[in-house]
Length: 308
Image (cartoon, rainbow, N blue to C red; front, side, top):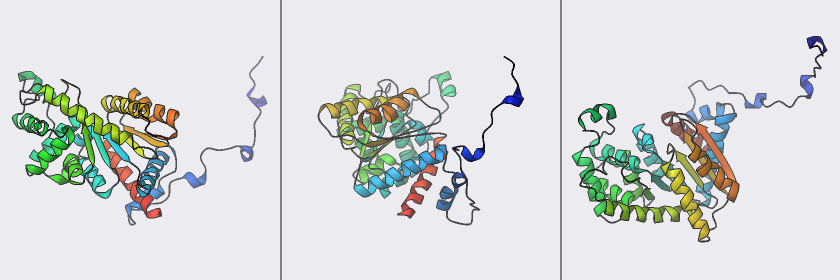
C-alpha cells in the first residue's frame, strides 16, 4: 500500500469540537485597573482554571463555615510567604495550618530573629550546619510548654516579642486557629541538640497529630491544600484521614489541592486523588514556584470574592 498525501480525507473545521475557543482567550489587562481584573483577564485554561476552581472552593467553604486546611513544607516559608499565610489566617481564608519540622523552624527564626536558612554546603565543612543555640533553646522551651509543638512555638514567639505579621504560627495562636507540626525524628536541625528532648518531642507530636486528625475529621465539604510538602504532610494526612473514617467521621465531598514546583508521587495520590476517588469531591493540581503560585492564588481569591 502506497502512502499518498493527495488521498488524505479532510474534514471542515465547522464540524470540529475545539478545546480552545475565543471565550477562553486572555483578556486585556493594561495595569491601570485593579489587579483582580488581571486575574479575570487570564485565559480560562489549564492552571488558570485550576486556580479559579480552588479560589471558588475556598470562598464557598468560607461562606458555609467549612474547614480550610493549609498544609505546607518549610520551603514555602523560606520563599518569603509567611506574611501571606498569616494574613490568610487573619482574613479567614484558611482555618487551620499543618507543617513539617522545617516549616516550624523557619517560622520561629524569622519571627524572633528576622532571618532564616543557611548555606548547608558551607556548614558541613566545619560541622556548623544547624548548630544554632537560640533556635534549639527556643524550640526546647516551646516543647516544654506541654501544649503541642505548633501551639508551643506560637506562644514562644508571642511571649518573646516576635514579629507576628511574618509568623503563621503566632498568628494562628492569636486567632485561635489550629496549628500543628509533624516532625520526622532526626530530620530537623534542632533534633541533635541537647535542648530538645526526644521523649518530649514525641509526646508533643502525638498531641499535634490528635489535633490534626480532629481538623481532618471536620473536612466534609471543606478544602485541603498541600503546598510544597513532598512526603511528610501527604503521609500524615492519609493516615489521619483513614483514622477519622475508621471512627465514623463523615468526611466526604472535599476539595483536595496540591501546589508544588514539580509533581510528586505522594502529594498527587495521598492528598489529591485517593481521598476524592474514595470520598467524592474535586481535585486541583498546580505546578510552579511557590513565590509565584501562592500570591497568584491570593489574587484569584480576591477576584472570586468580588464576584459575590
